[in-house]
Image 1 (cartoon, helix red, strand yellow):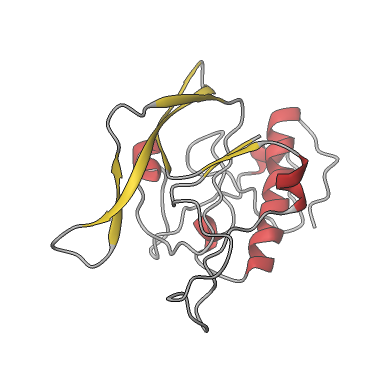
Image 2: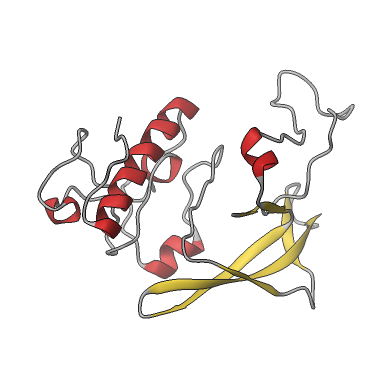
Length: 186
């Protein structure tokens, strides 16, 4: 498991300018991180590579964050000569605390969006072999084999809703790939 983060690695302790009531920008390591895998910071995924509709590799580049003269907000700038690849057979996009924005990936894939800009998902019964999940949602987007959940599907909300949505999406993805699922959907 490899976790890629576009933001730079946060400090281990809260910094003087990082004041309450803002959410603290500090490094968090969960038991999942401690069990293995790797985390890469300040990395932007350029594109997904694969064959016959299956992802095999992510092409990435390291970035640095800098403010442009015309804006107060920093933005990522690619660092020349830092392109690298990551082998992959499954890609999950986790983008909490990100408001619904039109993203190049969604546009490049041709995903339909709701009037609010969230990624539209379908309730097509064929995605779950005719057996609708408890919510009636199948989490598949307008592009077969591409799924969306959480903030990307419903807009920014509480983390508990994103967790629930993610679990249901995992169930739907498992059904799509395996023809059935033993994963809990609730």
